[in-house]
Length: 184
Image (cartoon, rainbow, N blue to C red; front, side):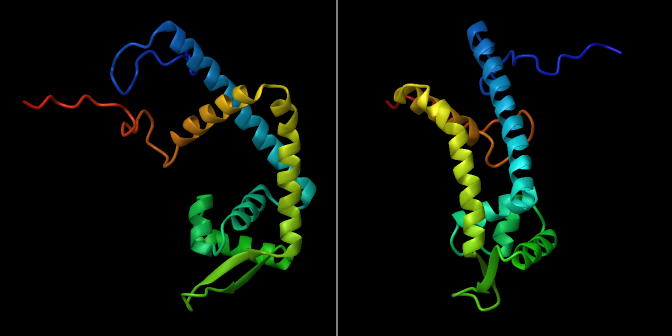
Protein backbone atom coordinates (compact mmCIF):
# COMPACT_ATOMS: atom_id res chain seq x y z
CA UNK A 1 0.00 0.00 0.00
CA UNK A 2 1.40 3.42 -1.00
CA UNK A 3 1.90 6.21 1.49
CA UNK A 4 -0.64 8.99 1.22
CA UNK A 5 -0.18 12.62 2.01
CA UNK A 6 -3.80 13.65 2.74
CA UNK A 7 -2.94 17.19 3.76
CA UNK A 8 -0.41 17.95 1.06
CA UNK A 9 -0.38 21.56 -0.08
CA UNK A 10 -2.30 22.40 -3.22
CA UNK A 11 0.26 22.61 -6.02
CA UNK A 12 -1.83 24.23 -8.77
CA UNK A 13 -4.43 27.01 -8.69
CA UNK A 14 -7.65 25.22 -9.75
CA UNK A 15 -9.00 28.50 -11.17
CA UNK A 16 -6.11 29.10 -13.57
CA UNK A 17 -4.22 25.81 -13.83
CA UNK A 18 -1.00 27.65 -12.99
CA UNK A 19 1.46 26.40 -10.36
CA UNK A 20 1.20 28.12 -6.99
CA UNK A 21 4.32 29.90 -5.72
CA UNK A 22 6.01 28.28 -2.72
CA UNK A 23 5.09 31.15 -0.34
CA UNK A 24 1.41 30.86 -1.31
CA UNK A 25 1.48 27.08 -0.78
CA UNK A 26 3.04 27.60 2.66
CA UNK A 27 0.46 30.25 3.67
CA UNK A 28 -2.34 28.05 2.33
CA UNK A 29 -1.10 25.03 4.28
CA UNK A 30 -0.77 27.07 7.49
CA UNK A 31 -4.21 28.65 6.98
CA UNK A 32 -5.82 25.27 6.29
CA UNK A 33 -4.31 23.81 9.45
CA UNK A 34 -5.38 26.81 11.55
CA UNK A 35 -8.94 26.81 10.19
CA UNK A 36 -9.25 23.04 10.71
CA UNK A 37 -8.02 23.46 14.29
CA UNK A 38 -10.56 26.26 14.84
CA UNK A 39 -13.37 24.06 13.47
CA UNK A 40 -12.38 21.12 15.71
CA UNK A 41 -12.11 23.36 18.78
CA UNK A 42 -15.45 25.08 18.11
CA UNK A 43 -17.18 21.73 17.52
CA UNK A 44 -15.76 20.38 20.78
CA UNK A 45 -16.75 23.57 22.61
CA UNK A 46 -20.27 23.39 21.14
CA UNK A 47 -20.65 19.78 22.35
CA UNK A 48 -19.55 20.72 25.87
CA UNK A 49 -21.74 23.82 25.89
CA UNK A 50 -24.84 22.03 24.63
CA UNK A 51 -24.33 19.30 27.25
CA UNK A 52 -24.06 21.94 29.97
CA UNK A 53 -27.23 23.64 28.72
CA UNK A 54 -29.14 20.34 28.58
CA UNK A 55 -29.72 20.31 24.82
CA UNK A 56 -28.16 18.46 21.90
CA UNK A 57 -25.76 20.20 19.51
CA UNK A 58 -28.44 20.15 16.80
CA UNK A 59 -30.98 21.63 19.21
CA UNK A 60 -28.48 24.35 20.13
CA UNK A 61 -27.93 25.09 16.44
CA UNK A 62 -31.71 25.21 15.91
CA UNK A 63 -32.16 27.62 18.83
CA UNK A 64 -29.46 29.85 17.37
CA UNK A 65 -31.10 29.92 13.94
CA UNK A 66 -34.55 30.55 15.41
CA UNK A 67 -33.12 33.38 17.49
CA UNK A 68 -31.36 34.94 14.49
CA UNK A 69 -34.21 34.82 11.98
CA UNK A 70 -37.65 36.30 12.59
CA UNK A 71 -40.50 34.31 11.07
CA UNK A 72 -38.45 31.18 10.49
CA UNK A 73 -40.59 28.24 9.36
CA UNK A 74 -39.85 24.57 10.07
CA UNK A 75 -39.03 24.05 6.37
CA UNK A 76 -36.57 26.97 6.40
CA UNK A 77 -35.02 25.68 9.63
CA UNK A 78 -34.60 22.24 8.07
CA UNK A 79 -32.85 23.85 5.09
CA UNK A 80 -30.63 25.96 7.38
CA UNK A 81 -29.59 22.92 9.42
CA UNK A 82 -29.25 20.54 6.46
CA UNK A 83 -31.97 18.26 7.82
CA UNK A 84 -35.21 16.85 6.48
CA UNK A 85 -38.52 18.27 7.64
CA UNK A 86 -39.24 14.81 9.04
CA UNK A 87 -36.27 15.05 11.41
CA UNK A 88 -36.96 18.69 12.31
CA UNK A 89 -40.48 17.93 13.58
CA UNK A 90 -39.37 15.79 16.55
CA UNK A 91 -36.53 18.24 17.24
CA UNK A 92 -39.09 21.06 17.45
CA UNK A 93 -41.33 18.87 19.62
CA UNK A 94 -38.46 18.43 22.10
CA UNK A 95 -37.66 22.15 22.12
CA UNK A 96 -41.31 23.03 22.59
CA UNK A 97 -41.73 20.47 25.40
CA UNK A 98 -38.68 22.02 27.09
CA UNK A 99 -40.40 25.44 26.78
CA UNK A 100 -37.52 26.82 24.67
CA UNK A 101 -39.56 27.61 21.54
CA UNK A 102 -43.15 28.11 20.51
CA UNK A 103 -44.88 27.52 17.22
CA UNK A 104 -47.13 30.38 16.16
CA UNK A 105 -49.40 30.83 13.15
CA UNK A 106 -47.66 32.38 10.16
CA UNK A 107 -49.11 35.85 9.60
CA UNK A 108 -49.27 35.53 5.80
CA UNK A 109 -49.74 31.80 5.19
CA UNK A 110 -52.47 30.14 7.25
CA UNK A 111 -51.15 26.69 6.30
CA UNK A 112 -47.76 27.41 7.84
CA UNK A 113 -46.31 28.16 11.23
CA UNK A 114 -43.33 30.16 12.33
CA UNK A 115 -40.92 29.53 15.16
CA UNK A 116 -39.88 31.83 17.95
CA UNK A 117 -37.85 31.56 21.10
CA UNK A 118 -39.55 31.68 24.47
CA UNK A 119 -37.96 33.81 27.18
CA UNK A 120 -36.26 30.66 28.46
CA UNK A 121 -35.04 29.78 24.96
CA UNK A 122 -33.70 33.32 24.52
CA UNK A 123 -31.88 32.96 27.85
CA UNK A 124 -30.30 29.66 26.76
CA UNK A 125 -29.10 31.00 23.43
CA UNK A 126 -28.04 34.27 25.10
CA UNK A 127 -25.90 32.31 27.56
CA UNK A 128 -24.42 30.26 24.71
CA UNK A 129 -23.55 33.32 22.63
CA UNK A 130 -22.24 35.23 25.64
CA UNK A 131 -19.97 32.33 26.54
CA UNK A 132 -18.82 32.09 22.92
CA UNK A 133 -17.96 35.79 22.87
CA UNK A 134 -16.16 35.54 26.21
CA UNK A 135 -13.93 32.85 24.67
CA UNK A 136 -13.07 35.19 21.79
CA UNK A 137 -12.44 38.21 24.00
CA UNK A 138 -8.88 37.30 24.97
CA UNK A 139 -7.91 36.80 21.33
CA UNK A 140 -9.55 40.05 20.24
CA UNK A 141 -7.90 42.01 23.05
CA UNK A 142 -4.49 40.50 22.35
CA UNK A 143 -4.31 41.92 18.82
CA UNK A 144 -4.38 45.44 17.37
CA UNK A 145 -7.74 46.46 15.86
CA UNK A 146 -6.42 46.44 12.29
CA UNK A 147 -5.09 42.89 12.74
CA UNK A 148 -8.49 41.74 14.07
CA UNK A 149 -10.19 43.42 11.09
CA UNK A 150 -7.80 41.68 8.70
CA UNK A 151 -8.37 38.32 10.40
CA UNK A 152 -12.14 38.84 10.23
CA UNK A 153 -11.96 39.69 6.53
CA UNK A 154 -9.89 36.55 5.90
CA UNK A 155 -12.46 34.43 7.76
CA UNK A 156 -15.36 36.06 5.84
CA UNK A 157 -13.66 35.33 2.52
CA UNK A 158 -12.77 31.79 3.56
CA UNK A 159 -16.32 31.10 4.84
CA UNK A 160 -17.82 32.51 1.65
CA UNK A 161 -15.99 29.89 -0.38
CA UNK A 162 -18.14 27.17 1.17
CA UNK A 163 -21.64 28.55 0.55
CA UNK A 164 -23.30 26.87 -1.17
CA UNK A 165 -21.32 23.69 -0.73
CA UNK A 166 -19.44 22.89 -3.88
CA UNK A 167 -18.32 19.55 -5.18
CA UNK A 168 -14.68 18.75 -4.35
CA UNK A 169 -12.27 20.78 -6.47
CA UNK A 170 -15.10 22.85 -7.95
CA UNK A 171 -14.36 26.53 -7.68
CA UNK A 172 -16.74 29.47 -7.96
CA UNK A 173 -14.96 31.75 -10.38
CA UNK A 174 -17.51 34.58 -10.28
CA UNK A 175 -15.13 36.69 -8.17
CA UNK A 176 -12.10 36.17 -10.42
CA UNK A 177 -11.21 39.21 -12.50
CA UNK A 178 -11.52 38.62 -16.20
CA UNK A 179 -9.91 40.52 -19.00
CA UNK A 180 -12.43 42.30 -21.16
CA UNK A 181 -11.85 42.14 -24.87
CA UNK A 182 -10.65 45.38 -26.47
CA UNK A 183 -13.20 47.11 -28.69
CA UNK A 184 -12.15 48.82 -31.92
